[in-house]
Image (cartoon, rainbow, N blue to C red):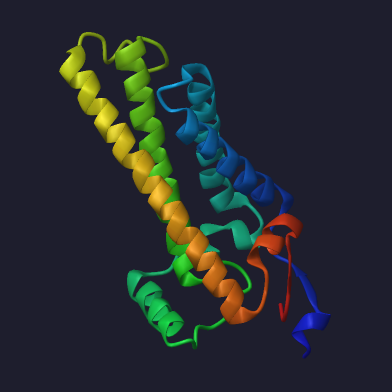
Length: 191
């Protein structure tokens, strides 16, 4: 069958909106950090809400959005990466095993960034849902929380860079635009 002749809807509208809104929310939060607290906090809340949505959608969403479609055991992820290096990686309609692992890594890192951000906001500004729990931890405690928050934010940024490299590599190896597919929701090929 000619792959170019077949159009398959892979990414539902909610996944596509989630993806680009998450990218924008994280970018705003990362770029505003200490300089603009209000946009930083609101972008953080947006990211937190999006994480919650994505976890829920991973269980009840469209077929390619479900975790059962793309979460694979570590040995399968490493075998796939080995095939990528050897330029013989199998094409997947949804996420490949490395992409699935990246989704989980990003969600975990973003969740840790969000929770540590709530802790910093609660302890440092005495605001947000954690303010009551973190009252009185003192300046050393606030500084420690800020370091943890910064660590996870930077880890998330590093994962985003690896994700982008993976998207470019997979797009080149399989001669398809994964970026376009994340805008249109459509890929070409067998179902």
